[in-house]
Image (cartoon, rainbow, N blue to C red):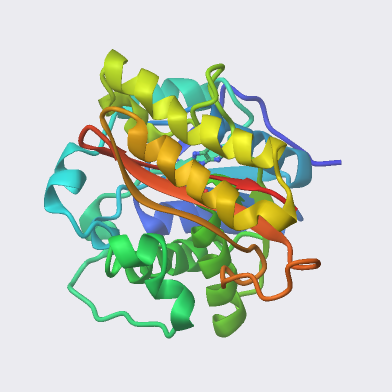
Length: 288
Ligand code: AMP
């Protein structure tokens, strides 16, 4: 059984030395470490990862760090929400024991080169629309893994391609930890929770639900013989929605994110990305 301390005792660290000192003590006491990496503006999607982490590990660490190297659009980085007081209050109501909330200088004391060969998965879907994004993501997640040294790390299926890329990175670098992928948490209207949803106007929010509605429609009417026509129907539905500009809608092999090669047996996922007004949203659903 995981050994948790009282929820009121959230420890907040901003330097790697402090957090490492605390976690080393916990490890010496035989406690396992679960890690949830976030960029803050916490919502129930993040909290679901913390709950899962606390079921499986003794000491849950959440990081909040808006990583500049994964933003290819400076305006997106600038306007990324940073409600740190609300985040701390929310974390205090969970079983999270440690918040690691470093500044940029703590993570990047000096400019550094980073490149990891992720193969073709880096340049499709999100990688195609956000060049360099996954180099930045792997750079910061690898740094955080090296600081926290968790036994288990928890990520959301919402960022499906990111989960695959982080798994690939840990395999390449032989990082000794296990990765857990948790289901997507949605609002009542189906919209996948995202820190970026705060940027949506009421009107935009209504139109944004076309993404999850279309994914649910595809899942409900899934028929492998009609895959191409279903995909076109999905694209038409999204294109017809006001205020929504589609980046991609794809149905791919969920093990590889490559095109389907075996219609009968490949595991399948539908993935979508679109701008709603100025806010870019992503979503997906496992079909088979
Ligand atoms: P972010 O703060 O957006 O970088 O997300 C931090 C972690 O929370 C990532 O592993 C995300 O995949 C996960 N996450 C974000 N939104 C959701 C959601 N709606 N449901 C489940 N997990 C999520």
